Length: 257
Image (cartoon, rainbow, N blue to C red; front, side, top):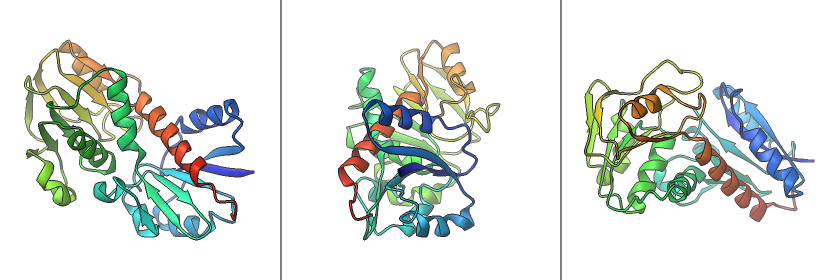
C-alpha cells in the first residue's frame, strides 16, 4: 500500500482524509490518506522516512507551509513566489513542492461567478495561505490588494503587489471592497470565538470569504451576514486544492519508490 497525507500540527479537525479517501475509492486509486500530526522538531525525521514508509506525496498545513521549503529539492511556480508550499511530491531522487491553495482559491471563485479582474480586495493575514490568495488575486487582475498583517516582515517579498498594509488594531469600513478574505486561523476550529478584525460596516455586495471551514459559519462570516453580504467558507477551496494535489501526485508517481 502507498500513502499520502497531511503534515501539520493540531490537525485532528481536518476532513482531508475523508475527501481524499472517498475520491481514491471512487476512482480506483490505490492510496490511503493519513494525518501526520508532527511537532516541528520531528519534521526532519519525518522527511527522511517518507520513502521507506511508501509515502508518494503529502499536503502541508498550518504551521509548516513555509518551514517545509528548507527540506525540498525543488519548488515550482507559484509556490516559489508565494514562499509557501502545501503539496509535496516524493520522488526517488527529490522532493518537489507545489502550492494548490492558489488553484483552489481561484477555482472556488470561478465556481460562484465572482470576477477577480478589477476588484478591490482585503486579505487578512500574512502566512502561507494569505500569500497564495495574494498572488492568485494579483495574477488574475485584481485592481487593488490590501493586507491586514501583524508580521509585515513576512510580506517583504510581496510589497510590489500590495496597495496598503493595515494593522489588526484598526476599525474597518468595508464599503469599497468587493471581497474580504480571512486567511488567519482566527474564527477557525482552534480559535472559534475570535474575530480576525473589527468590522464597523460593509457593502452588501462585498463577498466575505473565510478559508476556515470549521465551524461552518465562523464569527467572521456571521458578521458578513449581518451586513447582508454574500459569504463562503473554505470547504470548497479545500476540495478544489485537494483534487489539484491528487492530480499532481498521480502525474508524478515514481515507480522507483
